[in-house]
Length: 437
Image (cartoon, rainbow, N blue to C red; front, side, top):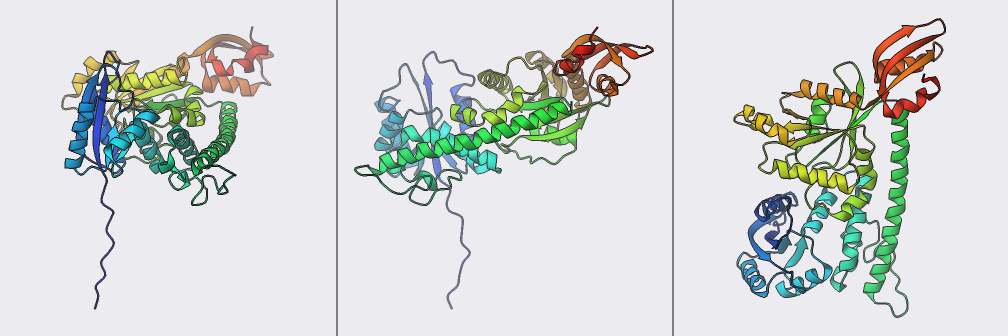
């Protein structure tokens, strides 16, 4: 009798890493540290890293990026290690990618850091919005790189929705058109459709944020390098169960929870997608609706993995990304996370001055969380404008609003009105204009 065996998993693809350092290039991480990060990204995508090579160059080779000698050396290593994928740490131009694929042969794929991050995002997109954002970024990245070998991309993109053998469900070819031209036109059509869908998402998020403003609850956006512990911190302060995983980009979609602050006030804490150096511009553009949550926040809570050897460089990368999305004027508090992993937690005192309003914490054990919430509340309500108002007693809602969201320095009860001297958040000032003395 014939025995049946259980199906086994497909063997993992093997990746060879390549780092390129341009002469006089300003880098957040060194080439070596950047390749370590690229290796973690590869592992997150399910690849096995079998080797790496680097080259420092003054000018990129217009055809193959690297010098001919280095390329031949890498090809020999790729064959020796039976590599499926050559993974470059920087984004390749369409020409570089085409020439490199010709050089390494049809059995070896050439992938750059951008394509790898897009693939990881596609793996982790769990909502309709996330899938739309990732798919848009994938198509915009692939369009200029489209060749005959890349046709019929609907089967490769995240959630394309088209029939097999076509992109976006269009399979008819016009007179004299090549399949490549058909695919390019259909991809552009799909991109336009995705942008319309994401515009609707953006409008929905805008209405949602407006409802939150009317509810008069301040918002705090958690930002940080990927895997810094933002989701763990949100779970700790909100007593929630947001997905936590020790891997890069474990969560993509923003999650909001209500948190009680020490003095009885409440705030909405929103966890956002983690940042990383060289974050693809296509992703930044596609995730615009999500990243607007950061720009609309009253306060940023920057979570830093203080145990990471490149913690300062990672923090600089986060600030650079905030500048890229034009978030530069929102006040910030820094949580120096994972102090439970330090052999000498007191040593963190020397790092505090490197960061903006820093508080050492452990999101895992809860150490430092009360102090963090106190300072967060202070910073949140420091961004207030002074005012003196004469509020009629019939305006009980506004009187309560100052008590709940502002700070009262002096209060007098008159015959027809209450006179309050204090401070309120800037976002609430318009509600008091007619009563300001």
